[in-house]
Image (cartoon, rainbow, N blue to C red; front, side):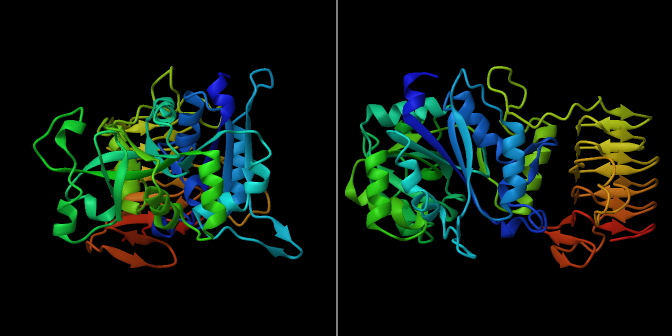
Length: 422
């Protein structure tokens, strides 16, 4: 490890319940949701930290934490000779009662005694459920060069995106002079318009500088903030205080970034990979996105016409057509089935463990027609099933499926009977 890496601790905030991603978060926390066929959302920020040579990583997890922690510890193995560590920090038991993290800042606050003994000078704080290909080294070096107490990664956004994000105003030195959370008033919004000279990619459209929820703190500034203000959230509560105190700077990042907040954003980000429509590179040997090793065989395809799709290892596919879709690990799809504009998340095993409550097999049957659908792990779909949202519903709940943003979602562990139609 380089000298800077030894001074920086990376904190990955992974306690999110992800209610807007329900039912994908019915049995897992948001950072543990599958992505791009063989990854979990948390693999993106951890991989970015490792690729940037920050090898001291702490995952702060809470909601349904055991599955996430198992994935992290089974996926990331550190060489003792190279140094570094990856630890999962969860709420502690106090007697018979668990002391829960109340929010992002509170999660760090409740671990401050432990973190303060590790000798770090800086803390890099990442979200466990965002997508980006960011060189975190450049971000950290910018903050150190500015001698900033706080550095915030920011993204230029267009006017239509600005009202749903926290916006900043900066001076010519990138010092943050003002901050507002989700402004709705057009007159207020006008005050935060970004000077086009700050953009590498020039445009005539007005842009605004939005927080990405990625922070770089000096140790003293972070600990002082956490001890003097007991509120629970970084973005809502503590970041505005530090900005008012001064010493806060904005690092402008002009690459791909997405905060996976809804079923629709999750769906679009996954399917965007099939046609290369999003700038998230999973094919780099220099900056790889790490995944749990599966030792699976290559997919076996029999007679299927496949267009603009990603098919993961271990699949056995006899389908008639797969178009603009993502098929995850170990998926099995029967003859004459058509799948379009859909995500089949795949499975952790071909057959359920003995004694489990899961379906006896995780297959999609023959002669099915599936469009605009997410099939979660370990679901079984019978023969002649049609999932096309023929009533064009935007939202719908039942015991067997949900519809969110017009997208059908089959939850994990569900069995759809033969000839089922929705």
